[in-house]
Amino acid sequence: MAIRIHIDRLLVERSMSVGDFASAIGITPTNVAVLKNGRARALRFTTLDAICRVLECQPGDILSWADDQTLTDDGS
Image (cartoon, rainbow, N blue to C red):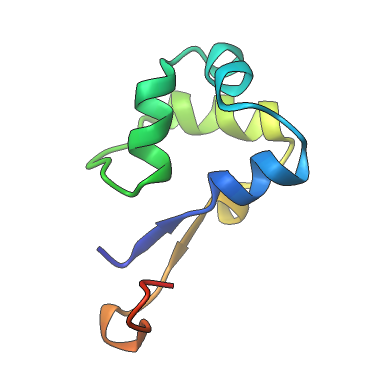
């Protein structure tokens, strides 16, 4: 998928654990892992809003798009 999610980077920058983050936004740590690993097929705007509030960021800091054909072999 060409949509990339940058929650890992933001959590590291804010020294926040996955468990604390999940609790703060109101989803399970398992669902945070689904988001982080790019396996999510949908993201509710209410969840995106909560993520932005907790991480004090904009949606564009969390999500980016890259053409699958331009990605390197390691998926970045």
